[in-house]
Every structure is written in C-alpha cells, then in structure tokens.
Length: 212
Ligand SMILES: CC(C)(COP(=O)(O)OP(=O)(O)OC[C@H]1O[C@@H](n2cnc3c(N)ncnc32)[C@H](O)[C@@H]1OP(=O)(O)O)[C@@H](O)C(=O)NCCC(=O)NCCS
Image (tube, rainbow, N blue to C red; front, side, top):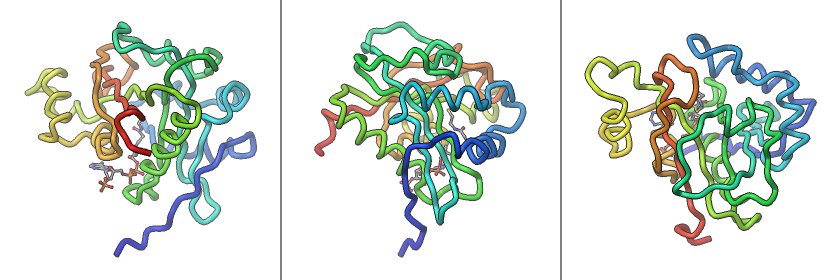
C-alpha cells in the first residue's frame, strides 16, 4: 500500500519566493543555464498576470514543487516556437485571457520529494483548470533532458520517438506520458540547454479525450 503523503496544491504568492527559488536551484543545476531560473521579478509577474496558473505543491506545510502556466492562443498547425516566445522570457506578460490553451512553462519538484506523485498532482490541477476555463488543451514545451546520454547513437528525432513509444526513459517526458500527456510536435530550438541539445517536445492533454 502506498503511504506517500498527498500533496496540497495551491496558488503561490510573494511569500513563497524563497521556497520557489530554492526549488529551482535544486532542480536545475548546471549545466542548465542559471540565468533561466525564476527571479523574484518573474515570480511576481506570474502572480500579477495569471495567479490561477501559478501553482505550488505542499507536503506537511513545506513547498516541494511548483508549476507555472499562462493562457495562449493555439492551433495544432502553429509553427514551432521557443520557450522565450511562449513565456515572454519567463515574465508571462503575454498571458491572453481570451486564448484557447493553458500552456505550462515550468514544472519542478524538489529532488527530496520526487516519485511520490507531486508532479502528477500538479498536472491534475492544471487539467482541472483547463476544464473550468473551457480551454481546448493543456500544453507544455518539455525539454528532452535525457538526450545527452544517447547523443552519440541517436538523432534527436530518433530519441524523441523512442521515448514517446516507451523504449527509452526520459526524466521529463516519461513522467508526462505517465500523467496523460502525449507528444504533438518536436521543437528543435526551444531552450538553450546542453542536456537536451536545445530540443523539446510539445506535449498535450485534451479534455475532450478524457471523461470528467
Ligand atoms: C520531472 C519531475 C517534475 C517529475 O516530478 P515527480 O513529482 O517526481 O513525478 P511524479 O512522482 O508525479 O511521477 C509521475 C509519473 O512519472 C513517473 N516518473 C517520475 N519520474 C520518473 C523518472 N525519472 N523516470 C521514469 N518515470 C518517472 C512516476 O513513476 C509516475 O508514474 P506512475 O504514477 O504511473 O508510477 C521532476 O523529476 C523534476 O522536477 N525534474 C527536474 C525539473 C525539470 O526538468 N522539469 C521539467 C522542465 S521542462
């Protein structure tokens, strides 16, 4: 029987900034560019522009994870985009309340709290938000962070395909597949990141495909 504590999901606010920044540092060590970790100004901007999309997870009163999203206009035929375009360089001033999709720009769970369903709980909170707001999809641009281990033998396209069919495990994409997302587009120039060779998969979850 699983006795893992159930995380509480709630909006984050200014008081959570120290905890959120500590989680970012623990989750995105170098070689991930440290300039991309949330700053105080970016976190305040998330809360200002779309507080419902600024979520954190608590266990026993401690913040152990966070997930940040905005609403964008989106169509399945849209050309590839970058993380900076999608997130307005991490500030979310491009949040569009009249958009069609909830777009996740970040998810991070402290290493000490992983593999206990915290990310799954954050995704489920995002899915509830998609339903509540009548949006067509939850999307996430998700770096292929395990690619550096296979770079000598596989192209990024082959690696992404192998992860998508479950033949390889990727530390970011595999948890998303387990949480119900599926790949829709390879984004080859998404984010400056050595581990993924800058590549990400656009992942999607559609409420229309899931009975409520
Ligand atoms: C990716 C991340 C958010 C997952 O968080 P988590 O709370 O450990 O994930 P969960 O416990 O909710 O796991 C969800 C599912 O994925 C599986 N899973 C989680 N991590 C996994 C891994 N490294 N390898 C394989 N499966 C994994 C879990 O077993 C679970 O599946 P199940 O319920 O069917 O057994 C976390 O590892 C993290 O913060 N990574 C660093 C930050 C990062 O790169 N974020 C993405 C930015 S694009």
